[in-house]
Image 1 (cartoon, one colour):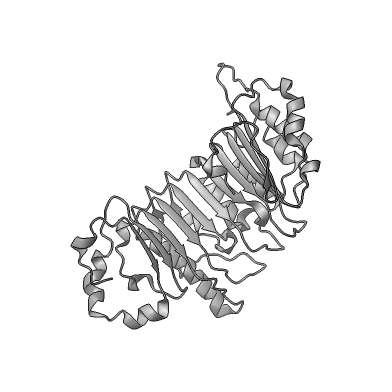
Image 2: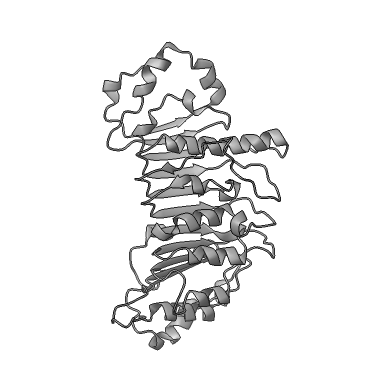
Length: 361
């Protein structure tokens, strides 16, 4: 592949590479390596790269012109760092490599990091200057950032990034920690608080948050219009956050959380205690026009709600029936879309309308 003349790849817009580190290392002295490396990805209108790396790969060894990238997906095989100290340091080095890679991609617009499973510890772990540069990495064009397994990201990762136009942030967990991190110890909360003000869309898997941290996350999203909140699929622990009656009430007051919210998707877990009556009250409050003294609406109107439940029978959850009975309490229900899923079953949307792709689970 490296022997292909650059002139023949000038229209290249997407390149997917699965890099096997051992094989690549044994061939990096090929005569094609040094001469072709700078031209593998020339800056064009859009370059998309999908990399699967061994955690020990050296970024500078890869024959890629990083400045030409606009879309990047970085993942590893399901590599699990052990709990002993040397592998713990390797975990930090992997995160440092991610930051170094981002610093080499000034034109990046879309980034998806699928983190490897790292060593677990009851204490939060911090990204230090001896692992990566302390300077701030500015990415002026990055609008979409997704991090899978955010619980494996050390503190200090978000503070290294400057993302002035970030609009869509997805933070997903996978491995449930019996002791969720709180406040300054939570890397998930660190991301939301740093980038929340510019976000228009966000997905938060709140299983690795405490109840207070979930509240602080929602408090940091003043402009978000599309929000997905997902709970755990399996067992839960008493320390973990849940979608509660108290939390939804805080989203309905005069100084409500997420005042610009229009589209909400909820995947409820076993810790969530929401009932059809509570959700009906929430919909009515978010549909009612809240007017400021100037006569202009100070809060956005909820346009769609999607709910996915695990382990709940649809006969016990009758939101649309309850909402229909109280329809007279809502000023204007026209255009509202309600979608309910129970396990693998989905009831038809209450109103036929094109689904918002950002609300798909």
